[in-house]
Length: 41
Image (cartoon, rainbow, N blue to C red; front, side, top):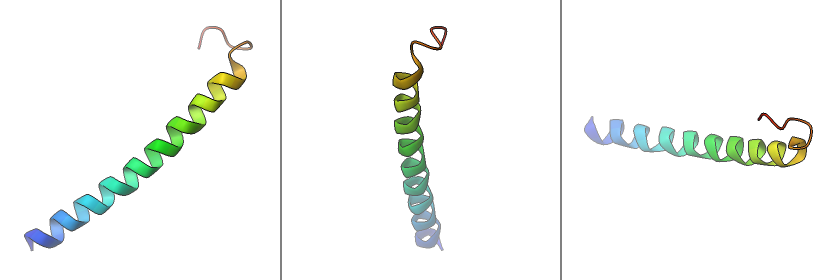
């Protein structure tokens, strides 16, 4: 039971990390692209 729970936690953490990394990459690209248009952000 404990093994199953830990494996599920690890897999969900990996998925979250993947999504987080993609989101950060997109947001950084967006900031670079729109810096001149949105100086406040």
